[in-house]
Amino acid sequence: MKKNKLNYKESLDELQKIVEKIENPETDLQDISKYVKRASELVKQCQEQLRAIEREIPDIT
Amino acid sequence: MGKVEKIRLADLQEQVRQSIEQRFNGKYWITAEISEIKNHYSGHCYLDLIDKNPGEDAISAKAQAIIWANNYRMLKPFFETTTGSPLSKGMHVLVYVQVQFSSLYGLSLVITDIDPAFTVGEQELLRQETINRLKNEGMFEMNSTLDFPDLPKRLAVISSEQAAGYRDFMKQLHENEFGFKFYTELFSAPMQGITAPEGIIEAMDEVADRIDDFDLLLILRGGGAAHDLACFDDYTLAANIAQFPIPVVVGVGHDHDYHIADMVAHTSVKTPTALADFIIDLFAAEEQQILYLTRRLSMALQNRIMNEQNKIQLLEQRIISGNPLKLLEKGYALIQKEGRRIKNINEIRVDDKIGILLKGGQIECVVKVISDK
Image (tube, rainbow over all chains, first blue to last red):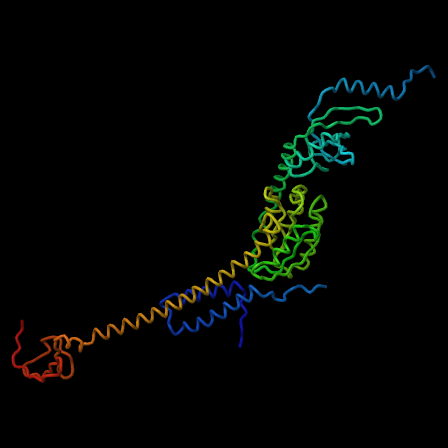
């Protein structure tokens, strides 16, 4: 499975859009469970990026 | 050789002294530049004052000057609180002097007063010139137009290791109450005095060599006295900050002063502690934003479920109240023909077989008479 690694702002933007979709009464009920699943992934990703310090740290030479 | 009148050096000097003291018997306000300054352990201050013709670099006049300890004790703090810097080399001053000549020490000027406002004015003028130059060269806004990283975690820090400000910053940042983690790397540099600009620029070059390793450059000092911050008005330092390839955040000042380094940096805060808070706040704000979104999400979800339930209930209600059998309960009757409900007299002809549905059962009828209204 290809997993697109979004940067923090992209994840947050997508999350924002999903929340708006769920808030929109026109959104089809069928799609909502799909959105909720994606939203929880995104929340997790954002939290991780806030909290974890990735090892992009310099190699000290 | 004829008889020449001779006088002793001491006599000549004495005559010079007398004529000088006669001619210059008052006190004079003079402007000059300080080219050397020495604080003697006895509390006296010895200076070399120089003057240059406007627009020229060559010295056109030079004199020794002294501030006696009893005066210096009062003038020094007064000058420093007004100008924000101690008397130092290169500074332009307006001083109140008495001319003194000694056979042994030559000419000297005894300074009895200083007007710090003049020095402030000169410094301000110089600052303004530097600002204008940076603006004309298109550098003034350069760093502040860089995109600020979303989550700046890799921080290059220029400071001096012993500085209280650096320790405050490290403690505040790494021991933040939210538990956010940061990577910091110190690039040591002198943070005050005339060597500071050059030292800071060298450290900046080191950071620039590994620019991909960092999100932000922080320049910070703090603690100690408010003076000696003039280096943060230095043109070359400002130009380097302005052109730095990643955003620079400066925290060097005290509450009351704002330097050119602050102006050209992407962001400036007052103290190293404030700088740590600034970064932590960025993360805290993002986390709040995420929490807010998850809350909105669950609210929206709840609302949606409630809405759908309401819709179902409403439909149910309509089905119940719209059920014609309900009407029969109330005493109304329904007419059917060939299994269809009849709503209009026009649908019925004489001799049609119709059914009448009413509470309790159905009656089969044949139509005999139709009368229009």
